[in-house]
Length: 122
Ligand SMILES: [Zn+2]
Image (cartoon, rainbow, N blue to C red; front, top):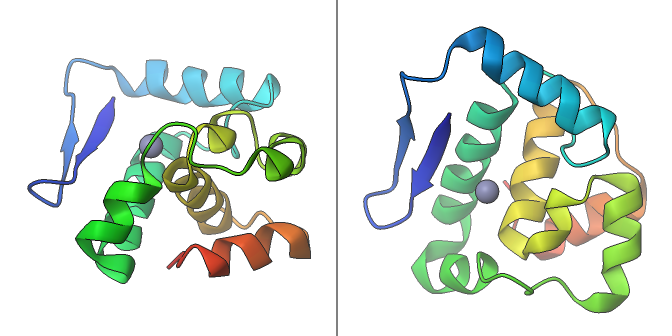
C-alpha cells in the first residue's frame, strides 16, 4: 500500500494495491484492534505520521524510535488497549498510529497524548 523511506524522507505508494483493498484492510485491522482507524486512507496517514515525526525529532531520534521493541513493556498493555496492537511494535509506530487516528478525528486518553508528546509526536 505505502511505506516511509527514512533515508530519502519519502512516502512511497504501491499502485498495485487497489483502493478498495486498502479500504478493506483498514476496516479489518481496526475491527481486530490492530490499527487505530478504519479510514480508507489509514496507511497513507500512518506513513505521513512517520514523515512528520522524523522531521520533528531528527535522524538519530527517529532511528531509535522505529526500532522494534522500543516501546517500554510497561506501556504495551495501555497502547494495545487505547491505540492498537500495531502501535505497540515500536515508538515510531505508536506515533504514526496516533497521528493517523487524530487525522480522522479520533480522541485518545491523556496517557496516550502524554506519551505521544514525550516521543516528539507532531
Ligand atoms: Zn509504520
